[in-house]
Every structure is written in structure tokens, then in C-alpha cells.
Image (tube, rainbow, N blue to C red; front, top):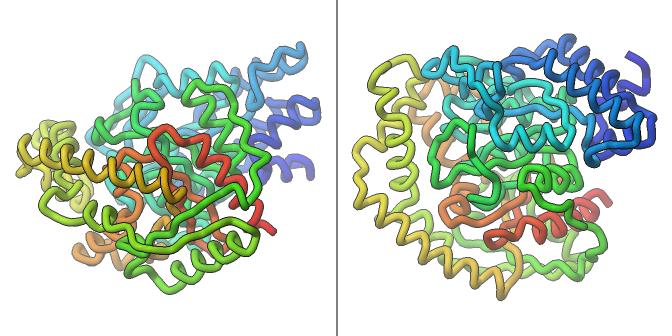
Length: 450
């Protein structure tokens, strides 16, 4: 691999797009560079479930021809992307990390993949995930457990585990994952990436293997906020937002000390504290205080788990009953919790969270974006969790504790690296405030980068 090609592997998606536009990068050579890196990487089999070489080659050739003709489709035309293996890919197995779906080959692309293809991106392949996307740890003994960038034997975060690893290990410039309770944000935080959790309904789920259809969202995992903005525009079919030009003083943050800041690992508390101090020193108003609505979101009797459990069992219960025992036991057990949840409990949970969401949206309007640790814990070693069911359950609950609240409340969020390994800073906004979050993320990114 030439020295320039080595640099391609660590560049952002937007940088690669600019290189193609300036005729410094050939899209075919770029795709080949990533496939060469994947073929040579000892952990690639734990990251990619399958590659789409023929498709990528054809897409890269078409991107090269458009670039030569001065007819590029957009800023990421010719840039390779990896896809979580729950987005349908025509003619290629899409199995969502589960033997329940072994051999499932869709006839059409998912709508979001279709949009990305129209924008000119190149599909590298499908990445591993937690079985049926139902865990925040990223552990999957059925297919493969993706490695964590800091220690391959620690949990990568889930469920978009391979998506995060493909970027963190320089085997894709950016990845597309899904987030039902934290599945974009947790692996992004544990692998020092930017991850955008979009508002439910903003991006279509047509052709996406469901988990909880009323909560499932798609979003990018990438190296920079700029990349997240580009992919947001493609997936949501929106104009590319302008995210520059905001100063730290234009950004107002509120850091709740209720629920989301409690019982965190010391390293997490200290890293997030340092990040907020640096933002404050740069001129960003940061307020600390209580937000009781977040504690209510985690309290019975209308715990969000009732909603999730009901939806997931309604979605997969029949298939699990038809093939009991072929799933990772921890995942099957988690699905079966929903077997006991009735429609009344589900309806009560939805109504309760609608009320809490109204309170939190009003609070954000008055106090600014919420800022907190993305994940309260550092990634745990995988082996002890596989040996201890109770430890697995507790670790999974903690991994998802902070992120899942905002799925239940229907809010948008972004996680950003703090500069401390495996610690993310999460900003939360009202539904539909993705652009506000991207602009804020750009400020945070620049301040923390010095």
C-alpha cells in the first residue's frame, strides 16, 4: 500500500470526499485500499460479517466516472461506508447477528442504503452486532464479538459493535448503525467516536430488521462531527446543514446531577468533569443542577422496560418460540421478559413517558442542551460476563442506563469523545434538533481538541 493510501485509512469521510473532488483520490483505489486493509487485519472477522466486494467495485467505478465527468452526486460520492448487518442489502445475507435469520437474503436494499447509494457512497460490507440488536454490551457468542479499540478482550459496546469497530480499527471511514436504547451511542463512546442518535421517525426504517419498531432509529458512527452532519443529511434526505460559525459562548449546556451522573466509574466522572470545565473556560455557559424528570424515567411503575419488552416480544416472540434455545441465552432471556408484559402496561408506559418528555423538552428550551456521561461505566472484560449471568445483566443495564432514557423520551442526542479512552460526553436536545446538536458538537469537538 502506498504511503498516501495509508493516510486514506485514517482520514475522515469528508476529507476523503474532498480528495476525490480534487482528483487526488481515485474511488476505485480507495475502495481497494480498504479491502486490502480488511484482508490483512487479524481482527477483521470479528468486525465484518460479510463483505460486498462486487457491489463496492461497481459503485467505485461509477463514482470514478462521475468524478472524471465533473458530475459528482454529493460530498461523499465515492467514499466507502460500512453497514450494520440489520440493514437489508439486495442479494446479500442480512441476518442481524442471529441464527433465527440465518440464510435470510433480501431482494431489495433498505431505504437508507438506497439513499446512501444515490448519494454515491460505496458499500464495503455488513458488520457484526449484538444478536437482533438487543444489548448494550456488544457481546455475541453466536456469530462474533467485535473488539474494543483499546482492548480486544473488552466489550465493544452494542448493539452496533462491528460498526464502531470498523471505524475505530481503520477498516471504514464511517459506519451506519441503529439505536433503540443506545446502540449507536454506547459503542461510539467506548471506541472514542462521534455517534448521532436521531429522532424516531426522521429516518425511514423500511428494510431494517426491527427490534422495537416504536423506538428504532438509524444513525452514523464516525470520526468527526462533520462526517455525522454529512451522513445525517444523506440518511434523512435533508440539505447538508451548516455546522460551523458557532462560538462557545453561543452554546448553553446544563449538566444534570440527577440519575445520569450517579454511580459512574471514577474515570468517567473525572473525564466528563474535565471536558465540561474546558468548555466553561472557553466561554461556554455550563450549569449544574438537578433534573428530577430523569430519575422518574428510571423509576417504576411505568419503567420504559415495559414498553421495550412488549414491543420486542411482539416482534420476535413467535420466532423465538418456534426455535427455542438457538439464541445466546442472555439475549433470549431478555426477550422473554416481554412475554409477561401486556398491552395495558405498554400503553401506560407510553403515556407516562409522553408526560415526562413534555417536562424535559420544556427544561431543554429553558436551560440549554443537556450534557452528561454517555455511558456511566468503562467497557468491562468479556470473559467474566460470559461466565456470570448476573454480572452480564448488571453490566448491560449500566451500559444502557443513560442512553435508553432518551429513546423512551423520544429525544435526539449526540455522543462526542472526551479525549479520555472510552469516555463519551452526550448532548441531548429536543426531538428534531439534530442540526442544533451537530452545531454544538462541532464547538465541543474543537474546544476539546484544543
